[in-house]
Image (tube, rainbow, N blue to C red; front, side):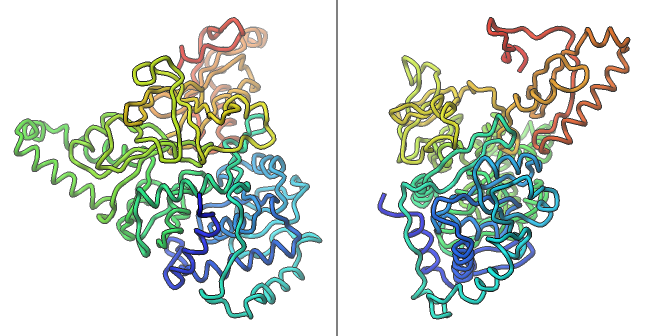
Length: 548
């Protein structure tokens, strides 16, 4: 790989110096030249704080201009960025900052108000993402240092930064760029270590196969603390000179579609939730009408009706998109078939944090139904079965965008990454002769939430099993929502003469406790009392597949 990540950044900033780079939705806008200036400011801040290449810098907050600048400045300095999802609880934030050995934390003011800086002993300080002021000072990060930085950060450029004199020192593609935590809770945290090369491979694949032009508009609503949104709503568009607008608020379908109608994005990334809600609320009731059903049976009127629906659906998504790339979770098969039948410009990709994230993709014109796209250029794939074209087995991949491993977790790394570089994805499937991947199931217990975030039921069960009158539990997915099945502590119930109505009240309180502890995307909607002990394997682990 000839290009480096830093060279991709620099070339884009120089080429697009006066173009708009980032906007906060209904807020500020900055140019590529402004981004270059802010990167140099943060580089000076890092240097004056004594931060070295390879040091870890954590960041937490919703998508914003300053979030993006902090990311770009950190990895181009040679430090390692540690993105934290903004809906992680304070204890999870403390744990990730400590486990990652982060020495600096960038945080929005609202999140900083809820965390305890004294619980993160290695920090030099905390910087506000609102205006890059100091939220938590120390000897290594104080107002005197900040004054020096403000005065001297452009000294090397004779205090007059231009596209001609702007430059950044290069960073080797083998160097570590990012540690992405798949979970927050102690005992379940796995920090995925991605080198610069992984990000470069993903960006350059997108540049080759998902063409965007300088000035094209993008709406960033997926969390850029997650690899999917980061790679394809932020890094790739930035390297192509696009204008990225960060939504910066809870991305409900209503808010997202309003932004699409105003900004008219040229490429849209989506999780199935948005697409499925539109289909179920707006299209399915229409298609269910007896008059429409009759019209659909006639080839000519079916063609005209499908064309009309496609046109209206295209307007809903802002009219100007080249295609919609759906990923992060499986798309409902009925929705997929309908979108395909009307000729809607969509495709489905497949990836995981451990690959930064892309594993497979094909554009909408070449997409094969029920597949997750074609294996990307820089990867190899094999199926752990005797016949990978017909017999389902675990999907294994190898290539330049695969992670180095899990940070400070050698045992977990060995379970998924062998000595020859093959990564076990934990997904079951087959491939065809063109290397299109077809996922048939998941070998792990991980649940993919409707917004594409990973949910590990063991985390929820570990906490739930310690709550009053719970003997054991299992968390499953039902109709896209989390339901906890609980086998109660019968002995304790009998001892305390607890009646059925009292037990139901206790379990409701337990559900509330759980939902107060965990992020909203891990919310349990129902807690069902199970009448008998769960069936177990000889090793005494619950046979999860019987209840899912």
